[in-house]
Image 1 (cartoon, rainbow, N blue to C red):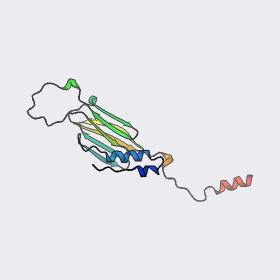
Image 2 (cartoon, rainbow, N blue to C red):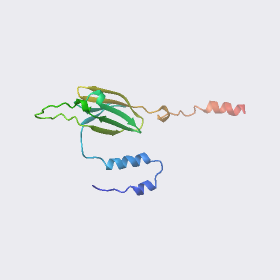
Image 3 (cartoon, rainbow, N blue to C red):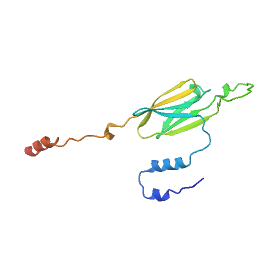
Length: 152
């Protein structure tokens, strides 16, 4: 694995801790397990869906959390569900997993649904009014400014 030293970049930046963390985590990506498989879909302009194939898990065995811009999905089979069976072939994986997704700013999870072994998590990007672009009309403040000057 290649080691990249980002310390010169960090020396000249202030307030970009999250960017540094993202760079570090991207380079240290775990190339191990691809379980469970998933899709990320853009549904509309600011709506997204993440679908994970979680066959064999029910709602009580799945946990979905968001913390500091990271969506974490965990699945853990209950010990009581492990009955003695004599499998000739077991192709349906039911192992414990944890899958993390880095969310962009202002992306929130709004819903989750489990149907037919597919867990669908719906996300929406809601930009606060203060951060949306504003159109400034030229000359709109002139009458108020003129009245304030005349009153003085």
